[in-house]
Length: 77
Image 1 (cartoon, rainbow, N blue to C red):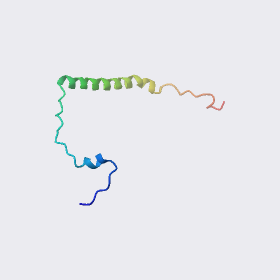
Image 2: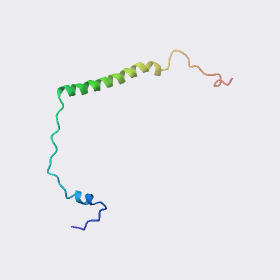
Image 3: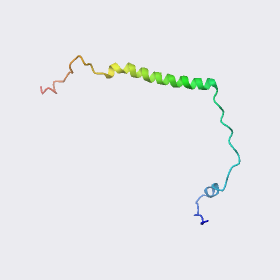
Image 4: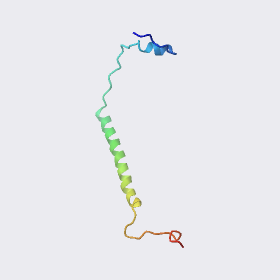
């Protein structure tokens, strides 16, 4: 094995030699009520975004039946 380079911090040099034998506890599964709440929140957010887009569509569209209005400056007057 090659010699190791000096490390400025002792805890970094010790870190690769330290192995924990403690396993973390298993993750708790979400209950049915929590899952339903997450789905409901997600659906509410998506419905709000879609609703805002639908309500904003008339304001974003240009009227096709009326001619576009030009200012007098653009007509050279």
